[in-house]
Image 1 (spheres, rainbow, N blue to C red):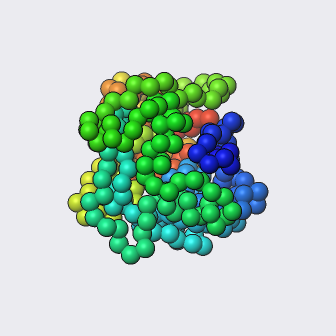
Image 2 (image 1 turned 60 degrees about the horizontal axis):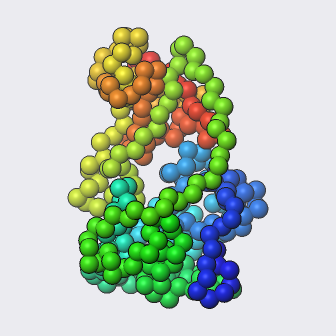
Image 3 (image 1 turned 180 degrees about the horizontal axis):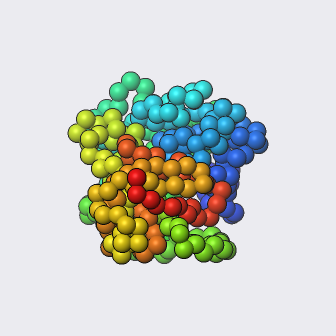
Amino acid sequence: MRTGVPGITTVPASTGLDSRGILEAAAAGRITTLLLLGADPLADFPDAALAARALERATVIAVDLFVNDSGRCADVILAAAGPTEVDGSFTNLEGRVTALRRKVTAPGTARADWEIAAELAQMLGADLGLESVEGIWDEIGRLVPTHAGLARTDVESREGVLVTGGRVPLPTVAAPVVPPVDAYSFRLVATRVMYDGGTTLAHSPSSAHLAPGTSVALNPVDFAKLGVAAGDDVTVTAPKGSLRAPARADAGVPRGAVALTVNQPNASVHSLIDASTIVTDVRVERS
C-alpha cells in the first residue's frame, strides 16, 4: 500500500481477508471486482460452489498465461508474459535468490504482471510508483526484512545468493480448537506434489503426463485395521462427498490419518473437504 508520497511505501497495518473471506464477500456483493492473478478458484478452492457464486456476482479480471475454468467466467482476460519472457527473480524455500533474465519476447499483447498491475492501478486512479524492474527491486529491499539491502547487481554477480536478513513478522493468530477424531474415522491430510493438473503444467506436452494421480496413502499399521492391502481400491467418504482410489502404504503418514494428493486427474479431493470446518474426517472402506 502506497502512502501517496513518491518513493515512500508501507505494508498494510492489518491482516486482510483470506481466500474464503474474499469469495464470501464477492458472493454477497461486498467485493465487486475480483482480480485473478494466475488463480483458478474453481479448481484450487475446496468449496467450488462458493467460488462459482463469487465469480458470477463480481466483475472478474483474469491475468494468466492460459485460460482456465475460472478464466472462462472472466469479464476481462489479460495475457501475462511467461517466466522466460520477463526480468525478475526467484526465491526458493531455502531463501536463495536467483536473478531471471528475459530470454524471448512475449507474444502478442502479453506483458509482465507488474506492468499490468501498474496500468490497472492507474486506470483506477492510483499510482503504484513502479516504472521498472529496478524500481521493484528497490521496493522489495526496503520493505522485506529478509531482502533488506539486496540489490539486483548483488544477485546477478553472485548467482543464487542466500538472503540472511530479519524474519518477516507474521500476524498473531489464535490456535483453533481441533475436535478429536472418533475411533472409526481418519483425519484427512490434503497434500501436493510437484506435478499435478495445474494450468501451466497441463499445457506443457512434456509435463502434462507426469501427474501421478491420487492414491489413498495410509500408515502400514492401519492396513490391518481396515482389512485392506496395498493396491486395493478403497472408498474414502466424508459428509460432503466420496471418492475411490487405490490404497498405498506410507510410513510417513501418521496413524489414524489418510493423505490424498490434490489436483490430480483421477479424483477430486476437494469433493471431500468442507472449507468451513477446521478439519475433515473421513471413513475408509474397501471398495
